[in-house]
Image (cartoon, rainbow over the protein chains, first blue to last red):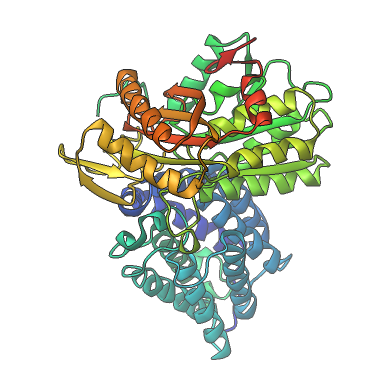
Length: 223
Length: 333
């Protein structure tokens, strides 16, 4: 089945992401305390809570419109580096999604790639700098590979989530070259990058939301 | 954690509200999005100066809003940069038509949020220039990091660029003076004990009673290395050595010496540091022409200090001496 993902999926994703961020608020801040300033979980929780509040009063009709709502909420509520980085990621994903009512596998992968490019452009970090890029880059690449292999949307998101998780784990031994952790030099090695960790959680929520038939795959309820 | 607060989530709002009540003659507080504005802004024909950053560094930045310094200060959550939806309206509110200078400490979050706000302001037809402050010599390897951080020198940039704007300099000139101050100031800090972010509830790093952390920034982040505790003169030597090595001044040159407390160190100890720093600078043949000692850019209740040395020229000295009337800095006005 070549079902696409519509705005209901995008909304479920963001609600699921808000829950998972709230659940991991302390863990993320602990990671940040080790190599940053200890507020990543708190800041993201504030941003995703704002998304949920906005979704309670408006219901965007396309995935792109949902992403745009998320981008504006994150930019205005998160602060720190994570606000502009996540905000830019969702804004670029919104632009790539355009007015499409549904994201097919190719459009979905294009949106993830656009998000990754946005993070890279805003933060000027490269792969291996121990940042969010280390989760988003493998995720975008895995999504593109899944599309090339003829996979459907669920598989594309599964591949992206798994790659992001592996990418986050792979930041453990790295020495940070961007962001506040870079000031620690080699002392940043041995700790997971909090931004890569939160990115993996958020992309896993995207896959989980797509796995729930009620969450907005038109073909889902007939399967 | 014992703190004089009501609710960790309300720290910034309640503190800014109190600040507005205490200094109603100087500032107005814009409630939502929150920023602090000079009472008579926008001042006709004057370039506007906007700074901001995470809260927890008080009196920076709200304490420097007023005549001869900032037109607006934009506070973020504690140790978290403010957001573009705060910085943009602050920028628009202080623009008299002469343009606005953003003074931004070189921390990734501050840089990204001010960059987005500057793009949005430009799109609304406001000319924005940015002065990036990066005076912290603790960051040795700026090629493989986010670069040197903006610390103590920020206060000096805000004072001197503020005086340039007040005397009527145009946008590029105000930004140029700010950049010149930044290029001529170097800072190094030390922590004797960490600070506790209210919503985190635990100290941002652990230091035993016998250790100090050299090369700290102002956000409770650890520094470059940890050494056993020493006496004040020894620590002062350690802080000044990389500052002077980086500034490379010749004998006979004039400097401003700024000993800044991190929030939890008594003024009496800061003067002990200042005393020895004057001696060290004198031995290097430098003349301390101007001084500033006190808690001006803090990290909550962190114990420790930073030492900044600014290489003065005649214009910077004149602008430093120019009248200023803010909550935290006042002379000649």
